Length: 146
Length: 146
DNA sequence: TTCCTTGCAAACGATTTGCATTGGA
DNA sequence: TCCAATGCAAATCGTTTGCAAGGAA
Image (cartoon, rainbow over the protein chains, first blue to last red):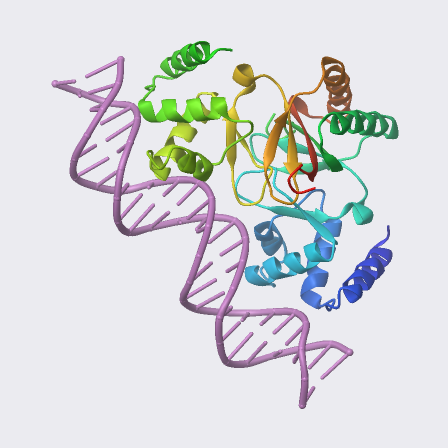
């Protein structure tokens, strides 16, 4: 999805939710679109050279989450990170560094994803659990911390 | 693993780390051994009828984590939950209710686990990531919230 | 003009820590 | 006995919220 397309989709979705696509919210969407992985409010704040106050970032993220544009991720201690929702970024998984806590996106092959989906379907069926989503994360040490 | 065996293993491990197996720590280990899923410090505190102060629970959990007896889980917003490490509880996965935030353990069949392990190995190899562990979580709605 | 949104500061909830006291090996 | 462990209260850190000012339809 190109930047322009993304912008259009987001704009439309926010309009459906009757909230405005303001410059502050645009900053968040743009930063997340550029990102290689989920970002915390604090990380976003640092990235935009503090041009947007933290509290506004929290509010923007809350609005965007409500509209289904971003989703939260809780894989690391103490911070919530956000990324664009799957319908905007595609389905993917995470590599989580146990040493530095960084989170990196990773796409897996169609074949692997298909196998995984089948596996998860089986498992969900065994438990009385209406499956909505699966999360596969690989924990280890990233290149820097190896 | 029986309660007595567990106790022995934990006792030994703590001794190796040169820390004591005190009554407060015993309370935590016992509660987690009984639990169907990871528990937060607050949940543990409620469970023991506040016999152990919150700050002590946090400290006990930190010590136990250091010794590799418990591991943290960050799947839900705002709280860290702990469970006994795999070498004490066995490998398993989680069902996370997107509505009420509860986390439930689930074991999957040998066949499924083997397939999953192979999948993860492939994926880890593709990325330059020294894989240590994999986490598969299934998000949906639990029986109560369905 | 009318609301939504923003910025700042105060409020909050989860977690951590300093310090004096207690307790286990 | 002696140092680790505990309890309490105060301090931190991430996150949320009240309120007055700013901005877009």
